[in-house]
Length: 364
Image (cartoon, rainbow, N blue to C red; front, side, top):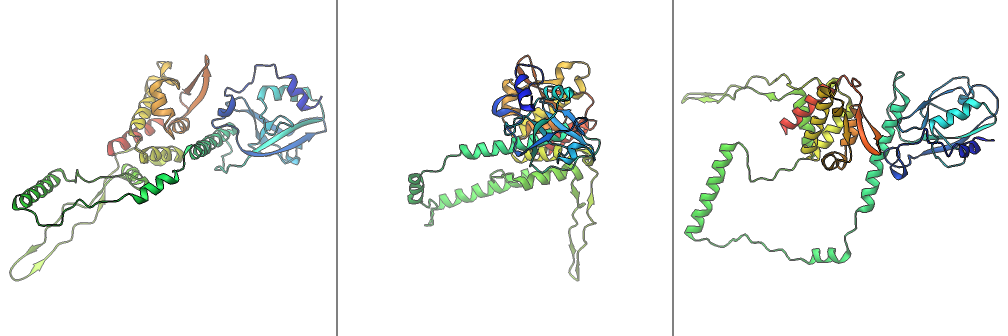
């Protein structure tokens, strides 16, 4: 019996099944990749180490240099699939049960993900690398879905917009004395209010990615202090001016962000640029509860994704789920309900990350 036949024999087993079904499998549907077939003819070890992923799949974590797997072109990070299924990933337990039988020839399919990811250090887990690729695939899937849902503007609406007449309501004719005085008084009142507040409340300010990055830099490095301004003095005989002292950088009040992962700070900057301050506040509360209250009360380690507020502020906001996963949360299924669970002690920098988010909110 070949590998594909054995796969059908194990169809009735419930162990090792993926927790996510349908188009939502692996955080974004079927992951794209190159699929090719491999046949092991000779008996003995396969020359590779298989690791179980978080969703129950089988991924290659190590390849022996002189083994059969290396000769077949298998590399670290490849996903084991059923033979002849065009990329259907094989459950870890079922695949290992067939390997232990030692029957030959053994035919399998290998799927190699084509998404370029940063190199993983020797001590890192292959499942962690697969999880990073799944997050990127999920983001691509959301972007493609959003593009499909965008409806084009009908031609009639474009014609109506082009034919719409615009009117200039600003009068250029002579004003009465009372109207001129009222306009001057209103402008003077606005100028006084701007001087009192230090900014113009009537001016519309939109935050883009540049301002968000500037805010992150302000939290990271502190504000530039140019000292007290020096007013130039003058006399009847001569005039002179004094330059202000060189600018000095204040000590940052935020934690040392150089120790924070780059994907964490990038996710925070993305949420800040989209003005998702409410989501940032909710994320800081969830992370603080997991690190401070979680050791004594396990209920704070679990986030139920079906909760209405979690759906509104976390699940439906792009970047929030990815940020929680970068902090050590994992998606699991408990009693038929999808949850995110934090592993205690997995991220030593998480307390600094919470302080970093709070500083971003204060400077917003």
